[in-house]
Image (cartoon, rainbow, N blue to C red; front, side):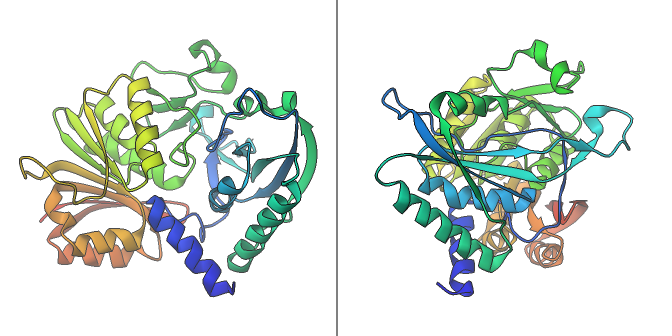
Length: 355
């Protein structure tokens, strides 16, 4: 496969998953936490020995590597971000953390190990043709070393002004130990790993969550296109939206979103469907708010296909700063008016309304 083929493969994966493009951004500044976004729990017959692959990279590239490795390994993939703060904020929870992300993946030690390891190394080689990927390290680990240890790498996370994401197995009493102070107006969501994406690590999710805090009003009907884990639909309802429709083309995303809305007690307010922005709608009325945290190219394609008719106000992200002007131009040609542009690192969030 040449470098063009490698890039096409990655672009194909992005469009299939409807997720923000993980390649191409800068070094990354994130709040200090650690997170596992892929996990496949072992069965009772799981082996006692595994091979752990680990490599250190940037937050954006870590998601691309995680996506590429997950189908090739037996025991899941975890992302662990270094907790380095800059000392520039008044409160710890407002402090941005800088530092690399460690990607860990687990291969079963069996007769297929050599073949699987070869496929992993080949995949990393192709990714390296698009953007430099560090050489992985391999080490043997026992079942007891990792079957519960992945939970230790998943910490509570604050994004936006009010949203705190907490794994279900972490007691609220432990928030302070993880550097999180829960305030009276905070909204705490339980989002467990097992999903392929949408834990709050990426800047585009954080941009969308912050935008929801400003644009969601009580009683709104919200449409979340490319919902991922359901995080934005759930947060919108928790902020006061009366209902939300969450759609994604990926059946795994639909399954995970259904689990997450149940965990967070909002199943009666959120409908989840497999599909895209053009899923059938009973009343034909536009939604009060449409959120799409996907890809700049996909957003523009959807706008050309009638996306603007499905909402009254719009929050778009998954857009690199170099792509923002093109998205704005396309949106304005479809009758939308830009209200606000926000940026985090190399990523942009755009808020529109009908002109």
